[in-house]
Amino acid sequence: MNRIKLTLALMLAVTISGCASKVEYKDVTEVETVDVSFGSSDLQAVASKMVDSMMTTPSVQVLTANGQRPILFVDRVSNKTSEHIDTESISDTISTQLLRSGQFRFIDMTRVDAVRKQLDYQNHSGLVDPSKAIQFGRQVGAQYMLYGNLSSIVKQDGSTKDVYYKMTMRLMDLDSGLIEWADEKQLRKQKSRSLLGL
Image (cartoon, rainbow, N blue to C red):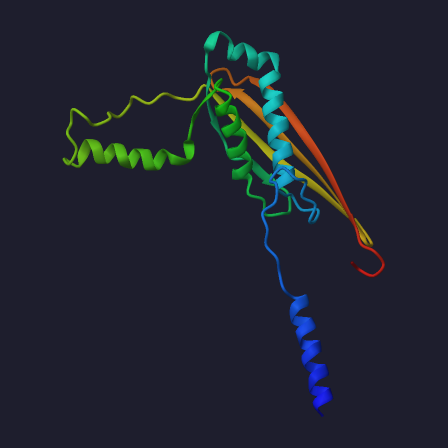
């Protein structure tokens, strides 16, 4: 009886130790291939491609020549995939890299309501010194809109799953409606299961 208890205790200990998890920091630029879903490596590849392309396109270089810093607003990237993808992170990464280049300025359209509330507070609450309150109607409007969409095609045949992603972005002149720049980045990921399902 003691031998059975000892064997069961050892089996339980081995099972528990086999279930232990380990957490560690990894390099954020390291390629992530956990599955075929859109991941951090894909986001970085898309953002880098779009920023590099936009910065080196002759029409955009003309816009930023002579120290001019065009004012852009970024519309949220449309997610046309079947996955839940945080496309705001894609927009944030692209706009942050462009802003850090020192060649563009941005208006954050996602905060318009918060700005309006603050200006209303400053100008109509009676709690802010009128000589120090920021006045309505003094903000600068965007000259260009940066927008895009992310789409995918998913194919599955037996144990093989293939996912094709395409990110397309455009820069529109808000005054003329002309597209000043457009590009796309394509990614393809494939996962095959072994016969054992691993």
